[in-house]
Image 1 (cartoon, rainbow, N blue to C red):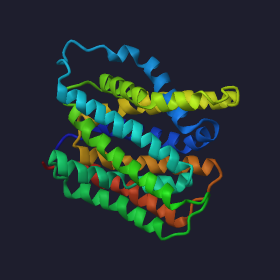
Image 2: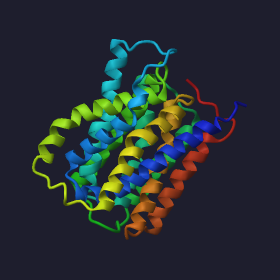
Image 3: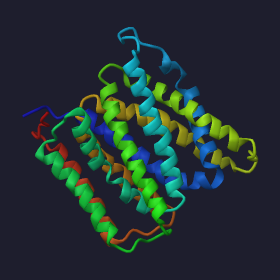
Image 4: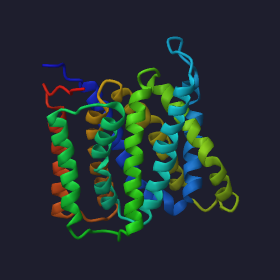
Amino acid sequence: MHPVPWRAYALLAASTSLVGSYVGLSKLLVAAFPVFLLAGLRFGIAAVLMLPWLHKPADEAPLDGRARLLLFLESFLGNFLFSICMLFGLRQSSAVVAGVIMAGIPAAVALLSWAFLRERPSGRVLAGIACAVGGIALVATAKQGGAETTLVGALLLLAAVFCEGCYVVIGKTLTAGLGPKRISALINLWGLVLVSPLAIWQGLSFDFQTPRLQDWGLLAYYAATASVVTVWLWMAGLKRLPAAQAGVFMVFLPVSTALIGLLLGERLSGLQALAYGLALSGVLLATWPGAAPRR
């Protein structure tokens, strides 16, 4: 029997639940702000909030070339490309469908962690991943409620799934030498650098008096959760678990996304509810006490 890392589980579940909440609420933001400007404002606000986190702790080694490259890739794939694919994908799909597609993230994480980290997930972790994938297969055969989803929208969301898978695998490597706060601040800074040219281009023709006060408040929440809180929670929890097992906690993302979709007036079918039930069952299988991951 291995001690159950309850704190890591709680951190990961809280992180992905918050991500799911802003995935759904992002549909309101993309209606008020152009996509690239929205991403630039997000990273800019978060950069101000995380200025104190950029300082190198005394017990951390200086950044070498490999760490700098990983930080860039973490931000390019997990922040920049993920945000763009997710936001453009959401414009062509419903929040409920987006949540179901993103339930495939645990499978993507397991595949990438096996390929790059040589992790061998336990049988229970694999069973949990199978539950998530099974949920996607179930809901794909059902008639979707809410807004219509196009093929391009689905493909963009699928690309976001693999971007997030890379984010988990690279993040696991980074946590071996850097603290969660510094990782969060550095990858957000890279995200700001990457998106700034496109954000400035859209900002020059945007009327900043158009968004309502509640839109600006939602933007502040989006920036604080997407770039600050969720990243720190995720990196802190990821430090204690194998990447494939941590990836199973991504199922909280579609569950919370679906709840936001319901609040926005979308409908949840019985088959979709069954899919989310399978996903949550996967978490129980992957984290059951005594199930030790093998490498």
